[in-house]
Image (cartoon, rainbow over all chains, first blue to last red; front, side):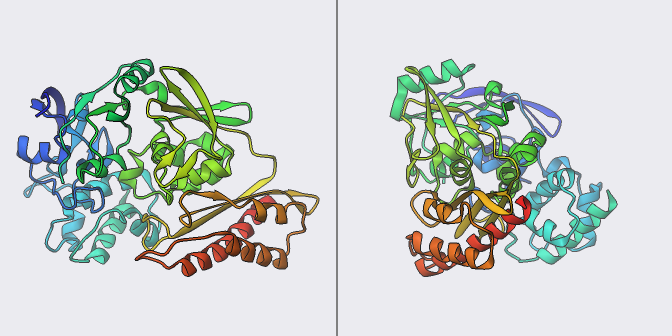
Length: 156
Length: 287
């Protein structure tokens, strides 16, 4: 085991200081070290998008980022959006449009959508689908996800 | 699916990064955006004993005017290239191509230096570097070195970059006035690695084609400039017949491979179709 380093990082507004081994992926740090299991782990090589979080405000794969790199960074996960009693508007749109079936892809979909809605016009369904192309839904419930994003894009 | 252990270094300057590269050489890997490297680490296909994280080196993250051209720092992210007003103004083909690179979460992290150093034969940036006659600037403990994009890509994931060298920036020389561009790519799904892509630049002079540049990717071990096609186009009047002949010539000038996703014949067919589309788009923007 290589030498652990102590990192200081802000996750969903809470500051944490933890020792981490350099090879620890951010996805495992969030789930195992901090117990924030909302971030899901699918493929662990950047293809499925399930582990997408925001790093300093930009969406990124938590499985392609080492926890040690998060030293001094601000991380946002699905737990930071809202909770069951207090859904964020995006989560509410997902609920309203039935944009989840099994829910495995949902945290990554939501965090990707936060970034997409900030950065892109999303003026057409083609553009929304293009934006979501890095997140796989194995229930193939894409139509409903597109509807939820379309509703959010129109509300901005 | 977890990487093997490594030592993690986070240099505070380019000089320190290069000194560390010099010390560890082939045992070290530069960690930039990590979007190609970390999957290889997770699969344990590569097992460096040291990772040198250059993400804090802000002096490598810039897009600056230089004459009519641009200097672009190695740590510039794909998303920055996609949205930079300077890149859009000077090299709109580059911003347009960036929208085809993977997905937003990948473009937020991936860097131009990383993509050029990794040299995936189906990656957009190496092809764009070839098309735009980029110069790639590298630093090692031994000093600076410059290499033209032509000849830099030696094979799949293989470049002229030494083990002790760090790509620090690229220079894109100004495009000729009235240069139009066309970028055409075919992938099975949005953001997937393309089966093939063709990018073209044409200038218009007195109703005829002035300069012509055509580059392809995904059909050989490296991206390629189709010099013979360029020569056939230069100085000619733009007609349907000329474009058809250029597409057939491109078809004949590539030697693609077959794999599980697409046969060589299909890839060659795509090159012809995409060449025609890219040339038409380039001419429409030039004329």
